[in-house]
Amino acid sequence: MGLTMDFKPERSVYLDGEINGHTCAEAMMGISKLYSADQEAPITLFISSGGGNVSDAFALYDYVMTALRPNLQTVALGEANSVAVILFLMGEKRYVGNLTILKLHEFSFTPEGSSSVTARGARKMAKSLELSQTKYADIIANRSGIPKRKVRALMRKKTTILPAQAVELGLAHQVL
Image (cartoon, rainbow, N blue to C red; front, side, top):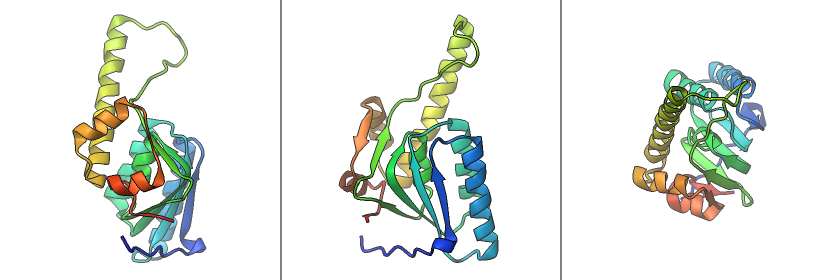
């Protein structure tokens, strides 16, 4: 695509490891600090994550995409799996490393505390999972241009996407 990454280490934020409240809050603070220092200059978000908490990922996505709207470029290195994919898609320019893999899959839920779930509780969990999956698929479709039905099919197949495929599908703009 001919994009040139405008990388400055001092304008970079790193999201590494599990997506959770702590890692998302750190990313929010880092992006906010750089954005407040210069609202026009590019910010680079490096992501290497196997995924994690859907609610925390949605909160970071909403904050960056709705509240701040920074000049953000994202770089996926190693793995960007599950909900890390939507955080990668926040970038207006998106880059993947040569060895990067992205993974899409259907969501699952592990009840906290107890393994016992009532029928009503199971229906409620299923409804919540489906709602989250729909939001997730919508984000991927809207940011990449992949038809939503194809996104859902990729999720059902537990798809591993290699760098060239990420560019071909519209998830990434360029392989580094």
